[in-house]
Length: 545
Image (cartoon, rainbow, N blue to C red; front, side, top):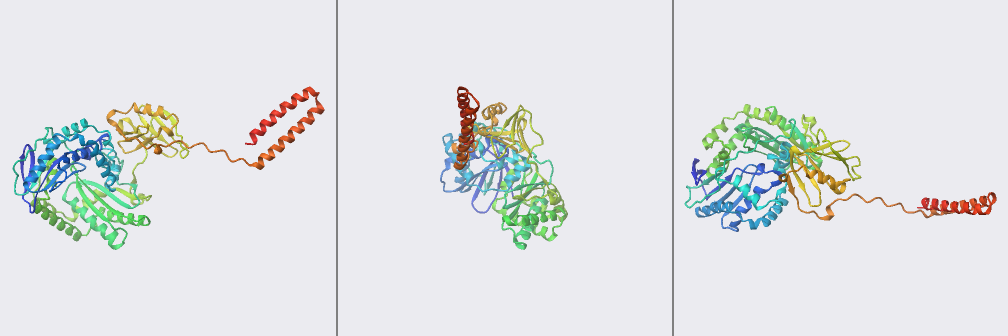
């Protein structure tokens, strides 16, 4: 049974558990709280807070998620005390001397991280803010200063914005959890970048993915399990089209539950996997899952919860509930709610999910045929302002428009606009390149070397950007800075053509000489002949090139 208490001014959840004691300190801050210019700051603080432990004899870890950041440790009571006290001490006084090294470590970690469908799904659903931020690299690392980190800790890593969980016989002695004081900070309200749903966008060629946000309820969790079973049966067991098929759910701070499903695909099987995937979603929409399937998922979920209760593994999710302002739920209550789920409940959840769905189709495939609307890739209008011609032969008709309200890239078939009042951030390179990113996720990239009047354009654009919106980027290799193509070389001279022109010129000079000698007086003829000779020579020089 989970009990609630307060330890050192921090709310805590306690529960007995089999195996070694384990504990975690959780803060209500994550990727969704970061502006683009500070992307990566929470992860950096997590690393710095753990630096003092080095190579320890016990298992510990930290993790930064979308809404929460937590520090976890498993081991003896004394080790848990050392760990939790050390994390709090590290947050009180971050080892700023490690800042350059930890930034490089995070860049290396990011470089080795695999792609997840959750990133592009979040970006297309929410844009370049809150729940779309995990799709973006940790661009803010370069410009982060010690003062930035101290301010972030003072705002987010406070006693009032933290919660503790301990799985074991009780509270160990000697805990010193002193943290700055602040206030509980709720999760951000999810933004919306989709004008209508269900919608789709084209993603990588090797995966089909989908997500939907539905009200948080046991039936939604059951729906995720039934979806996974149905997709696995259809795409792997029956058709052999996919190898990895999965579906899962995650609670969100606003009371929603986000269901995500994905299946891999070979390039030549994209259409077949997409159609099979959509067919399963249509079964969910129509309430067509067999009652036996739903019962099997409910039973499996109940068994999983019972095992998690024995090991104390339900505590992290309940701590998240606590920080989100939701009630802590005991095992008996959770099991009873699950067992009350009916096929009708799952059918309702399925209809809501499919209506809210965002589908990532593989490669160049589309999904209009299934009733999905293409998510917008372009803007509906351009800003007014000064126009700049692109020096790019591959885009001869494109132009940039810079005005007091933002910037637009206008082509023959599309327009993309980022307005200053909807600006998420601007990537700024020392060589003058800029990338404007709007809250809706639309981007306009400016290479001053490829714009007629590029330096003046960049100077004008920079006046509309606030300092906190600027993302300082590392200097680029000069070889990677684009330049306009060199003018084409003149065609090689044809010696036969040159010879013909020379003969014609010689003949013309001779003819002119004979005519002038016969028709004009010698002094006049000589002058006229000289002028004609100069003209013929000039023509030869031009035509003989």
